[in-house]
Amino acid sequence: MSTDNPLITQLRSIVGPTNVLNEGDLSAWELDWRKRERGHALAVVRPASTAEVAAVVKACAAAGVSIVPQGGNTGMVVGSTPDASGTQVVLSLTRMNQVRALDGANLTITVDAGCVLQSIQDACEQAGFLFPLSLASEGSCTIGGNLGTNAGGTQVVRFGNTRELCLGLEVVTPQGEIWDGLTGLRKDNTGYDLRHLMIGSEGTLGVITGATMKLYPLPKAQLTAFAAVPSLDAAVQLLGLAHQHLSAGLTGFEVMGQFALSLVTKHFAQIKVPFQNTDFPYCVVLENSDQESEAHARERFEHLLEVAMEQGCVVDAVVAESITQARALWHIRESIPLAQAQEGLNIKHDISIAVSRIPEFVRQTDALLQAAYPGARLVNYGHLGDGNLHYNVQAPEGGDAEAFLRDDEKGVNGIVYGMVDQYKGSISAEHGIGSLKRDKLVQHKSPVALDMMRAIKRALDPHNLMNPGRMLSIK
Image 1 (cartoon, rainbow, N blue to C red):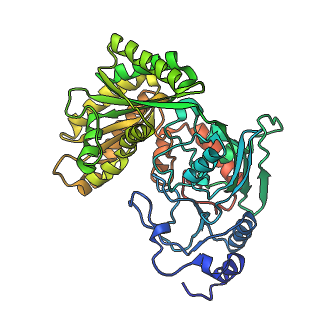
Image 2 (cartoon, one colour):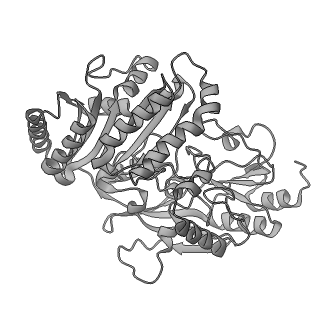
Image 3 (cartoon, helix red, strand yellow):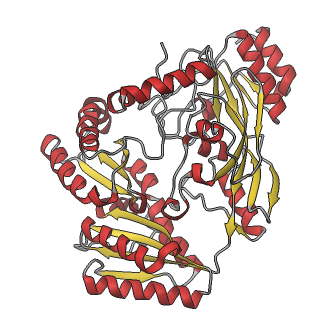
């Protein structure tokens, strides 16, 4: 792109010449995390403040140029990379990475949208507080992206999705105006809740530039167990027992199929996975957080596992004896997506079903997929505690993964999403819609709901300049 483009010149005057990138290798911003699509940006613009974001948005709006807000670019549904037209501006917020305030009495932290999630966790821990949002990409994803997609993660069973952790937002509108909603109030009944409208909107209604998030006291103890279970039904039974015996102390409950675990062993030999090469079809990692003491936490945890073994829903289990061991057990679960990527291209599903119906859903859907695609390998794992499964399908061993993805993805999705509809679930639990699932949303969402969503989009962004083509098709 020529340097005399008037918009490029204006953007450089706003954020500085070195923070407008339109030459060289821009793959860090133009290529989605799964490497499924590569776009081409007019420019990547890196503002350092909310005022600069507002000025950039105003300049783009005046020029009729659409904007793609981007955080850590770790999304799973191609929702934060530009299209191939070379006409879109990528608005990268990673320079906006400061903690603005931590209010211990109010139990809140206010941060820039470009703060990396792990940095927020660390800042809170150093101050003696817990920020419970936790997911595999926490070392690179940003809180703005987490809010834009209403990210979930491993602590939802106790603390909820990102939406439940947010008390206020600062947003730049499609017209370049700044809405300051960073009150940190837990009660504010003064009209429509604009905060919740923006959360999960994937940058299609405005640019989140700051957020006020809830904090919790650090637990006195956290214990992690890794348990082998004889079936998914047994895993659901164990979850019920965990709720009963641990109550609010249950802060994590993840299920992993043996094939998913075998991929971790195959591609990361240094990771030791308990109960491998056994007849146990599933394993569970569960976490107990306690506000009294480690001794109290261990007593409750061990009693839970004793009851579970007596009832037959746990066959064997190990309880971490140290923080290092606990992290190692969680690392097994967090390594599954990377191991699956190492195994080759695959078809991903981020679905949610009522917890009670998950075992039957898996049995029926497994059978349908195996009948239609003999040899297809099912990588089933996820957040059983909140009903969210990453129900993924790997090409048959030794097969052409690219051909499987190209030729069979539509059929595989048809089976999986058809069963999700039958079980009254959702085709996207925590990853969002992006462009990857935009057309599927039309097939699986109520027409009334879609009309309401489009009406909101047209009202707030009448010129369709905020992340167009993501989530909704606007005609």
